[in-house]
Picture 1: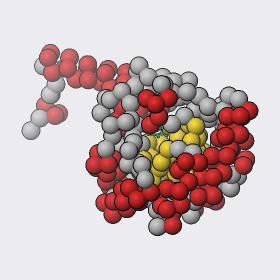
Picture 2: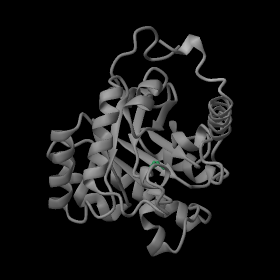
Picture 3: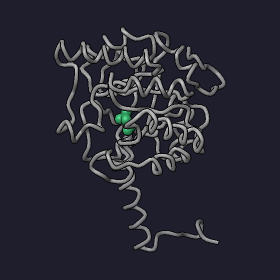
Picture 4: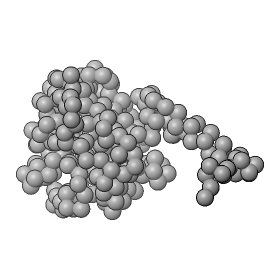
Length: 269
Ligand code: KIV
């Protein structure tokens, strides 16, 4: 039985901890109120990911997303969904120092209803996460394949393929948990390594392309609903073929307008 069996309660930074070793956590991305409201009753958490820079704005990577854009989209998501825990993805360059990270994170709390922020990075982020959590900001840490490093790393690389890399990821995860991160998100890591990281932590892990042993899963909504026809990484399961459904419907609409079949009396005053 679900932890929230009948009436769905707000998922909080505190209540999310109860899921570890009891029930898998479900997270999805959303960038607007409409989709957030469609997802609200089904998921535990919504991530307003900087992936919106690619799937919503059509850019090649996430690096040019700004605080203003992320705040605008997070306000929309918070308008559409109240019960899921909402996580704001701090954009590239918004948390270079602990002071800058805190200033920007406080702006997130003041201007949106987000419950937490997410930052990418390993041990090198410990000081920043300690500063944020001491000042009342809840932090999701993001390790493994980190899309904000795509240019400096020369591409997207799956992590955890060697013993040394697994050890380094476990060290990162433990350091981030000790610094106060309440969730560790693991992206693009081989399943066995993600399992070892999950077992090493008290806080829940959320995986994307990290196998089935994580405490929960996250997928980008437009990938899992099949709206991105040209982008289909191995870890994405398409639960519907959104692009085809939309194209077929718009084709039918166009044909009916051109042929005079729409609008009939039923759709006229
Ligand atoms: O920006 C995003 O959507 C993310 C997920 C891929 C985890 O960070």
